[in-house]
Image (cartoon, rainbow, N blue to C red; front, side, top):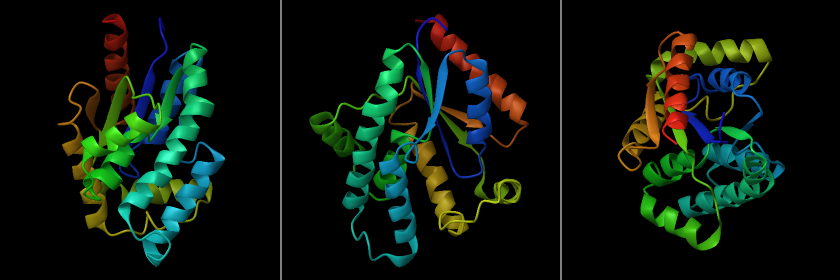
Length: 213
């Protein structure tokens, strides 16, 4: 690779993000694979708190609170992981990033996207991705993938996994809507296909991005 890229992979749970990131990490020399929010100790605590609140609804009572919790982690993640590795010439591949905030707290939580960007611009220096790939798939097709993953890893279902189908459909629609805000950066990838086909399409777009630089 001629220059490091910041690449984020988004999509609903079970869309194939982890598999794609593994393939990209193996393909791209000197790359780093990380995740958000659970890529920092702070982010893990934020994720635990928000996940618990999905059921209790007592810990966090306002979507702006959620936004600022995730913003704190974006800042920590950028300072400790994203920026240092980009500066060292490494391509950084992130499993979920700022677009998850735009979808979950912005579109789903009805916070204006431009306001969220304005807050970040006035408070933290968070790098935007060069490319974002949204793995798009119908929520009713992801249950089998999630069950298989849990059986293989021993992972226990969490409150996100247990959310109703309608919740995941709202998130899916949010990602599709987000494309209208960032039409050049966000690429919608059909994810209900063979994983190798998904990887080849994504890799082709990354190569085109590098060739046009």
